[in-house]
Amino acid sequence: MIEQITAVSKGMNTKGQSHQHTVVIDEPANMGGTDEGGNPLATLLISLAGCENAIANFVAKEIDFDLQGIEFEINGDIDPKGMMGDESVRPYFQKITVNAKVQTSESQERIDELQKIVDRRCPIYTTMVAADVEMVPNWVKA
Image (cartoon, rainbow, N blue to C red):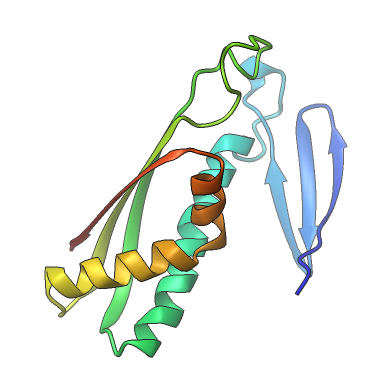
């Protein structure tokens, strides 16, 4: 499987096309953008939530888990000095905390089982782990 997008950028604004869908990534006006879309870092965290959700739905069917929905709050800690050119600071997230409220009739033990499987199989989560980003999952019953 190959995932492919096309993108056109003008200034800080990038319009990406994936199949029939358009995603806009931008910066706020005070950073030189037009604020037409989320910034790249926020968009990455939203992608993480979407990927975890998709994998959770696949896994829920496989393990007969009553998954009714998930609400995510994801926080990414980054030192902006790295992306601004300080070579002594890495230019990507140091830590990402994934807080997930799972709507389910299942026990916390089953939620923990689902979370562990999802985190092992989610391509975005595992990419962050491979990049040595500290990942902190907190999945609880809603």
